[in-house]
Length: 82
Image (tube, rainbow, N blue to C red; front, side, top):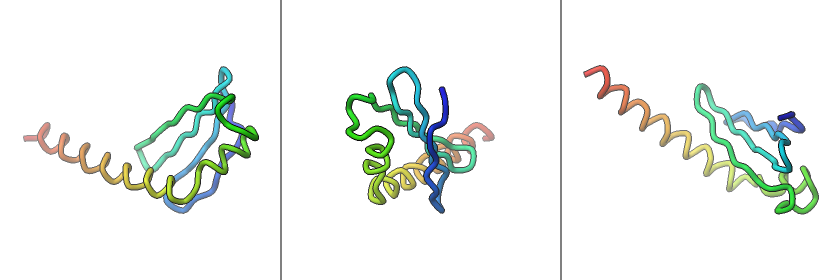
């Protein structure tokens, strides 16, 4: 797996990897991460097509998922400590 691009964003780190004819888009926020895999054949224009796919609406949805992930983990950890 090799990193082929990074997309700067104030709310999370966005990295794009290439591996086995797939693009892997990884979003990181603190200790949490989300990954999305796309077949290279499903994206027109290679990595530039991936940049087009990652519009602000999608990124804000990812950030909202991070909020839910953090909440779920905190609730589970609270039950664990009890």
